[in-house]
Length: 410
Length: 134
Ligand SMILES: Cc1ncc(COP(=O)(O)O)c(C=O)c1O
Image 1 (cartoon, each protein chain N blue to C red):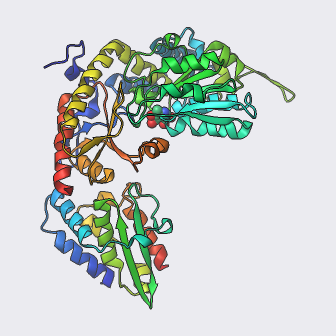
Image 2 (cartoon, chains in turn purple, orange; image 1 turned 135 degrees about the vertical axis):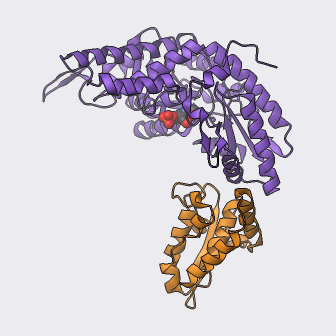
Image 3 (cartoon, rainbow over the protein chains, first blue to last red; image 1 turned 120 degrees about the vertical axis):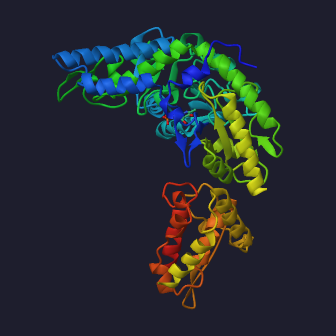
């Protein structure tokens, strides 16, 4: 039965050259490692080539034609990010290297505002990128890290928020969607709890942005971060959205060119937003490529992406549930992108290696989320992660591959 | 030809008839199954080989002039690969173990498993064996 949504997956697949390739001895690539990174549509590849072929110049600092044009193009890309996120202002969008750098930027800013006794809240489902920078901020400031616990389903235990939040809670950093389990967190109650104690809220959107519409104003958080390479754009670029007031309040992250207003040896005053957070020559090509990727997504329609993927994920859950000896790690109430599982008596590495030889690319291991693995008492999992260009045939190939894995190691 | 080379050639000869990767994987797994497991008491953290996605333990060192090696892993494939390495190294004169070059994985169509960034750590195991001999 075809999915009753306005997304022509075969037409869209044709936009992604890499999906046509084969691996090993001519096995068609079944790419199910989208939570690690996504593939790039032709529009992005062409845009990057055109930029370097025809447009390359430094931005924000030249009097000449190309520099002015490049600056305009780069700022247009920022407006694409603004549109994608539903942000009020383009200057609330800061280009970063990715999610990791964006979180470090914010955590660094908060380190100077926190003190002993203050508390930072994260969740049990975080990627290391949303744990370690906060631990470093706590170490610098004497603040304490608190953790919203999770249930056996892989959902957060929202009944325990009262135990975790206090009047000392200053900042809350939670992931929208878990990269390890695929859980889509119900952020409403968490943001409400943070509001009640006047804490700032950062949402790690790395695994949410590729799968569903984002509207930062409706979300009600203060910061939202994501990576270009996980949203069909280039590596080395991502974005931080922050409320104007918060970005004004936080100190710069790195010092250098472009981020200053006036420099003397006695004193430097900083540039306004967003330049204050963009020291040095930025990743111009990356920013432009990201803008192109997000424009592409908006044209496909994130509502369509979400509806299509919901159908695909439901099909994958259903097919995998039929496999004897397969155990889901995490059965969250709402899932996006990723499904983690184990096969009885088979090491995830063995399963992943054989699936790979069959052309099915999955990830195995801890998924940069060791606390999640510890919580579930496993060393690692097999993770299949999907994007809108995956099909039911990809799911079938995975299930068929699992059968071969079980035959080999059974 | 050194003893280590002769042993590797024997492995290569044994795999020569297996022209399908699935059969080669199967053979590797069977070698792992045939290797005596490492006693639980020896599966200690200081015997863990770093750089592997699975847990790999290596117990190796000189014993009366001969190099002794035993290994284990919670991955069947890695255990199989480890058993082949053990077969190459175990019982060599220490001098020879120190100088041994491992080349058989390339010849049996498992070349991708030698690359240092592969999570199975064949490369890491080999370095650990060298260090133990050195
Ligand atoms: C939820 C989540 N947060 C943060 C990151 C880090 O992203 P990046 O490595 O692109 O900075 C990832 C990447 O795997 C992720 O899945």
